[in-house]
Amino acid sequence: MEALLIIDYTNDFVADDGALTCGKPGQAIADRIVTLADEFLQRGDAVILPTDLHELNDPYHPESKLFPPHNLANTPGREFYGPLADWVAKHQDDEHVYIYPKNRYSSFANSNLDNYLRSRHIQSLHLTGVCTDICVLHTAVDAYNLDYQLTVHADAVASFSAPGHEWALDHFQNSLGANVVDR
Ligand code: ZN
Image 1 (cartoon, helix red, strand yellow):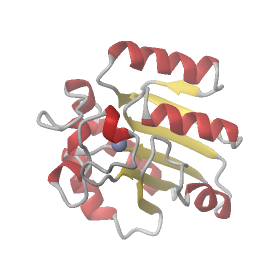
Image 2 (cartoon, protein in one colour):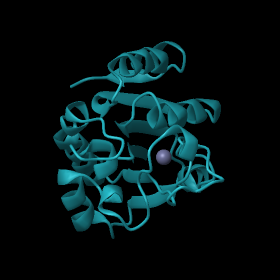
Image 3 (cartoon, rainbow, N blue to C red):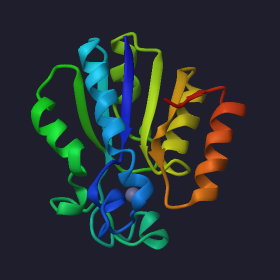
Image 4 (tube, rainbow, N blue to C red):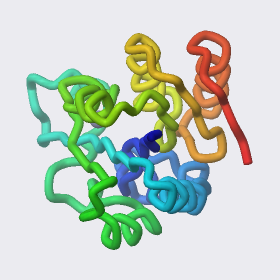
């Protein structure tokens, strides 16, 4: 069994009016993410959606000083973007779909993800979502340190920083040993 991770694919990170948006590069990967999600479910693999959750101006959270408020609880900005919102509405109760809130860049930080994967004997992770050089990167680093096999879908990750995106793709392949694939 393998797992597809769709990281932070919400309105705040993707929509034109999102608080921390990747803009067009983020929107351009929407259909590819949904296609991959369909393929994984059809094969009986897992589809996991680790999604940022913040409180407004939380004085104890380091991101409050680094970024504008984003992915706040119960706001449209935290809802999944476009076609992924429709996909989630249809599949969220599937036993192979796991949606959970995260509060750091890495999908592993303070979360049940490692236990979820180990209990299902999942050793191979496929990464998609945003931003390539922040939350996808930090998730990849933790996955590497936990000995997971990594595939990063270059056609299903995006960032608001084009140089950061390119740097991270290189890092996945050449420093983390990931299989970086394109259609
Ligand atoms: Zn955040």
